[in-house]
Amino acid sequence: MKMIIVDDERAGREGLMDFIDWRTDYGIEITGTAANGQEGYELYRSVQPDIVLTDIKMPIMNGITMAEKIRASDKTVKIALLSAYSEFKYAQQAVKMGVDDYLLKPIEESELRKMMDRMTSEMLDHRERQHSRQYFLDILGGKKEDYAALSGYSYQVFVLGKEPELKFNASGMWLMEFYEGVNVGIARYESVDPAAGFHNSAREGFEVRYAGSRVQGPEEIRRSYKEAVLTQYIGFYWELKELEYAQVVRRRDQWSTHEAEIQQELMKLSDDIRAAVNGLDRSKVQAAVHRTLHYLSHNQGLDPAYVEDFIMRLASRMAEEFAGLNDIKDSLWELRISLHELEHFRQVKGILSGWLMMLTDKAEEKQRKSDTTIVQTVIGIIDQEYDRDIGLRTIAERVYLTPNYLGNIFRQETGMYFNDYLASLRMKKAAELLVAGADKVADIGEAVGMTSTSYFSSLFKKTFGVTPKEYRRYYRKQ
Image (tube, rainbow, N blue to C red; front, side, top):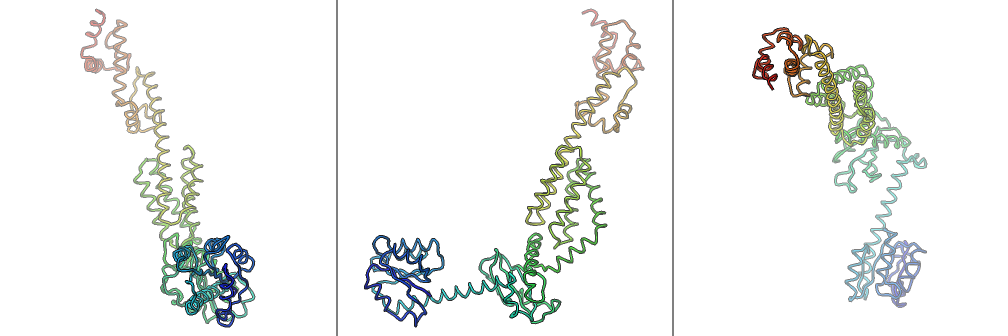
């Protein structure tokens, strides 16, 4: 280990150098001294020491400022302040800023040794951790130089949660590191046979456990790691606490071998959804969503890509069924993106339900516009043919609707029943004919499409409060 001493007093610098036998007692080499913070910082940059011992009060740049500059770029170098009693509060402030320790002047050997014991122990631990981490990375990365010493065993890689510091028992793990945002453990087994019994101790005590395949030899560890990461992704999607890659493979194979069943289920769901959307029955749409998720939930551990594919196949069928709706094809891309960005399977419900409700809204809007157009057509027919023998049934046949459906949309659009609208128009036309001409009442009834004179007269009086003849006499007097 290398150390520099920074003190504006020459006696202080030399005194520290001779205070103890640094090389013999701690394996430390003093690689330079400096008389102020500026010189000390330049010396640090040049030497890159492991330890910096520095006074606080110095000209040009004080020890605290120098320590701040060093710490800004180096989080591992050990920095200790040497402080007079009057500067004690500054030393305390510096410790809060990342300085590792401080000593009060005059320095006592026992206190100096305690501090050095503490700092060197921490440095050795850090180096050991760094060495272990590098060894872990070499193994995980497939560094072939290490293969000879690792042969004769089988290995399995585990992803064991995201906590930076483990709060659970790591027994059974040969190597353990926090790597790429997760805790990764490598279990080593005496048997080289990957099919040998699984050691439960390799996963006991962990909050979550996602395992790659058990592989033969160190050269396959990297593959097991990639499998464990994929398994973690799938397990997180399904919110499973434990999953092994072998289970993922089995589930994938089962799904692939049941394509005919999947197609059949897609057709059933498509039929149900089409009927619900056409009927504008949102409760049945939600019921179809529930059945879709129920079907998929029986395949826990399936790749999210397969779930996304199933939903998109279903949605594409719906888009084909309702191709005439505005922007329906563009909405498929938005649906795919939303599904791809999901973290958990349970979120599929909201995405699929929202898309199908949008589809239903568009279908309802189109139907409403279509109904308005149909009713306008029917009103045109009535206006042109009120003098003929027409009715709800005959006109419904001409616009290819059932009488019941036509009657409902006619009332929704006009606020009147079909028969009332037709009768009202006939009475209006009859009143015009009575005033304008001298035709008999029976002839006027026939002229507005009513062959029964008695019914015509009865309806006319009900409408205007007087008989047709009385109506004519009254208006002719005016």
